[in-house]
Length: 105
Image (cartoon, one colour):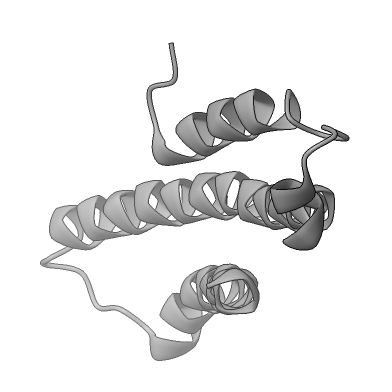
């Protein structure tokens, strides 16, 4: 049983694929097989969102840890360049994830 939108779309495509090559004037006139190919390609692109999601969850975890460190060091003097070194890789990873999503959405 499909549980998320991508899995449900894959399930629908699998059912529609049963009609691939059907000897139906209506399906042929509407380029049904070509539309099935397009749908499969779009689903493959949407699958890229899974990797983006995992990248975003790792960024979320890193930011949560950084906030814990900052709370623990509330009485310590913090240097901007040290914080920059921590934040820059996260910003880069977030930027790449957003670009991946923009290419799909």
